Each structure stands twice: as C-alpha cells, then as structure tokens.
Length: 316
Image 1 (cartoon, one colour):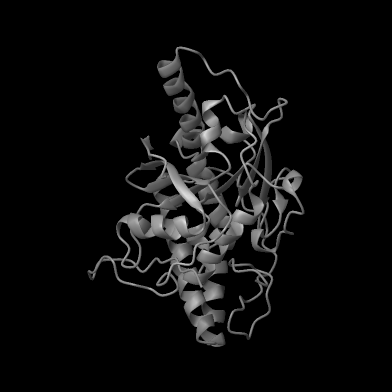
Image 2: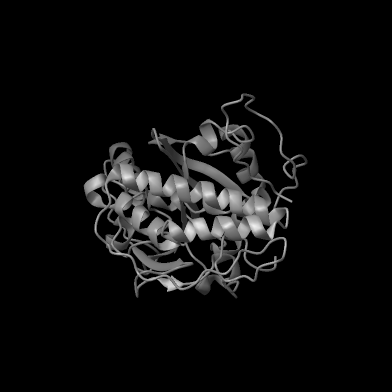
C-alpha cells in the first residue's frame, strides 16, 4: 500500500439498455436476454470477452455520437451475438472469484487492516473499534455490484447497499447510479462509495467527470467514525478501481492529472496501489465545495505517443 500524506444532469450517462434509438445520446434497445450459465470461464476467455465488449461499446458510442443509426444497429447486433451484458457480467464475476484473486474490495479491507496495525505500532494500543460512534456499521454504496459475497460484504464493519444496471442477484438492486435519487440528509448518505471498474464503462469523458462529481453528493458531510479510531482518516471516501492502462498508458490522463481532477472535487488521495492490470485508489472527501480549475473541461495531451489509448476524464 502506498499511503499519501495529508495536504495542508439529467438522465443516465451509463451505457444503459433502456433508451430509444435515433437520438445522438441514445443506446439502441436490447431484447431481453436469457440468463447465461454461471459456469466458470477460463481466464483467457474471460479477458477476451471483456476486451471485446468494451471495444464494441466504444464503437457503439462513437456511432451514436455521429447519429449513425445503421452502424449502431449493426454493432448492437454484434454485441448481442457475443452474449451482451449478461456474458460480460459472467466474465467479470469469474474474474472476481476468490480462486483468481479478483475481488478488488479485498484491497480496501487490507488498507483498513494496515491502518489499524500501523496505529498499534505507533501507540502500543490495539484499535478495536468497528465503526461509528454508537457501534453503527459504516454504510457502503457499491455501484456496479456483481456479487453479494465480496470482502466488504463479509466484513462486520459495513452495511452494504448494492446496485447495478442489470442485477443478477436478489441482493443487488437494479438501478442506475446516475438516476438514483439524491439523499435528503446524512441519514441517507454513505461513508464509502465503491466504483470498481465502473468509471471505465462510462462511454464519454465528460460523463465520467459527472459521475465522479455526483459521488460527492452521496457521501456524508463529515466522518462519523469514532474520533479516536485511526480508520477515521479513511472516511468519508471513494474507492476507485480502474484498469491500469487508463492511467499509465492514456494519451489524456496520468496520475498527476487525475489527482488534479479529484482535488477540484474535494477529494484527497489517502491510499493507492498499482498492479500490472489495475489501479486501486482510496480518495477521502475533505470538502464539498468544488474548486473551479480551468483546463479540466478540455482534453490535453499529457502522454504523447502512437501506442497510447484515449481514456480521458473531463469536468464541464
């Protein structure tokens, strides 16, 4: 774990399957797919399914942006022929299986454990706190949930609310995060929001920025963790997981620019880990007043090169 020192709209933007065709931002309707089997895919097959699905959706988004309905229809047909969202979710669930070490929430749980152990070494006292003052559990909103059996769900620290565009489990509510009603007060807000391999599925750079901005409205105003608990420095927070190339090999995004974007939203990076495939980051919300930073609304090349990808995040 890399610890970071403390510093002194309307409508869905996800690739929803429920819009009408023919408009610039629409996604062609998808017929109800029969549930796919849950038998495990091989790692290689799963990766191929996921890559192909993302590539096709990128092409679909480009066709819709040009209002090219014929091309969009052909791409949509190819997506469905490959198994559609059901097949993609099956591949993702297999990738998250414990046998393959794919549960990203384990990293968050590890960070909490490391924070406690570090505090014990410094103070000589164990941290036995489990959550808020009064013994309440931390509220976690898991966006794009695929399974109710991940590490956070098994932890006694969290009361987990799970949502996904296409739920495959009764414990996961079918809901678009971008259309979720805004909380009225802190009792309806969360201590942590998980966006694990969700932001990269949003098709447009400005829509990704809007999703990040919206997370701030669902987090508590201040941490309700017990003040004497070392884990209080981890909440309220956003757990963000992206494919590593989105940050390490993008033409329009690197870690410095991502930090600038997140800082402008009131977030401060407190934990991070980079593996060969994934970037894991925990961002603590320090304030809800947004800082206007010029230049974040337009793409700017930070990593020139022909082999770079075009992943970007914009704040309009």
